[in-house]
Image 1 (cartoon, one colour):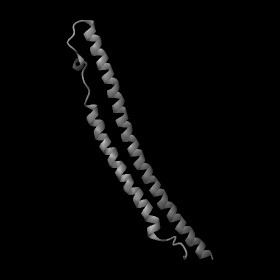
Image 2 (spheres, helix red, strand yellow):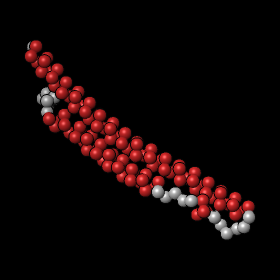
Image 3 (tube, one colour):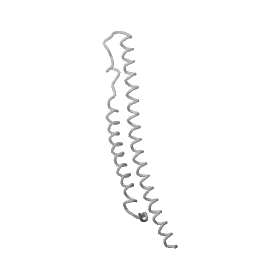
Image 4 (tube, one colour):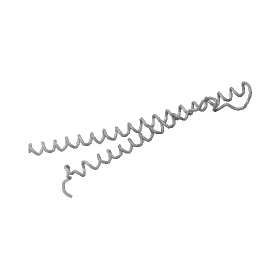
Length: 120
């Protein structure tokens, strides 16, 4: 079976290229989620959208309840969409940082092996 080729370009680059490619996917997802955030934020409704044709206090209470329920769900979903965009971007950054760490570590390791070989 022979010695392991520590200096092989394939061994050092395949993993990081994959990490960089995956980071691009997560950046794309973050961008898409930001467009969802933007579109969803424009879907608010005025309280009058929930008014029912009922006279008196019952109609006002029903309108208020429906509007309140809608607003809670609207705020909750918009917060989730925003968090999604942030988390997708964080995943992209983590993947890039990991790839850069591997690249740096591999370069240092190769340099260390060269130094050891020169000392022998």
